[in-house]
Image (cartoon, rainbow, N blue to C red):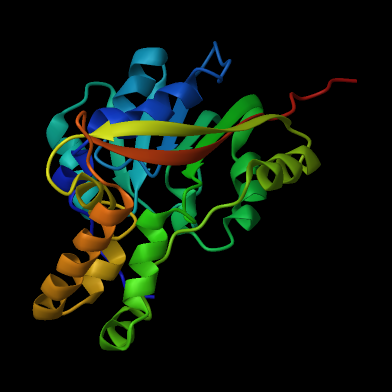
Length: 262
């Protein structure tokens, strides 16, 4: 699989809309006495700062596999938060974590259900694992991308591009219940009203479409983008108040069993 790079500034476009699920996720985390918080897949760190605000006495660490994102997070100079480059597939906590958060990251890891036992094992007894993933991969924004990428003139270049995927809430629920956790799993479809020309392209080119776009040679990428923009405008026609982007997300909050004395 080819490695793609991230553009923090493009990612932060529509930052308020991207941040809303993080706020909704944290609202269901009931942790009070917290010593350590880790944000796996912290991106540019703007949302990690909320963890520091929620638990100001805690040691807060943001981890991301993208050096570009970590550089941007460090440049922000968020007081009381440390940022590290690391791959969540191999990440190991040096001590148990009271709150382990992963926001819109697991969808980039194939077969990520298999990671959940290892993540739960790094949470302190009675601690919390909370994550959300997009659940919109059957929507036109993604289906049109992959239909276009499958055309003969493009497919040879994008064959190894990363393709995000996620499960329905029930799959996460059952996996974490089997691990002995108390689990709250749900889904929400947001109706984002986006402004600007080709707003849906701007949104998806910063996240889900980025690996495909980066895999294409520059000249061919321009042709691909032009056609993709046209198809997106047809699927998401702008209205008098902006362009409506329905966006389904899947949320999971799990509390790890406390140690039972006896």
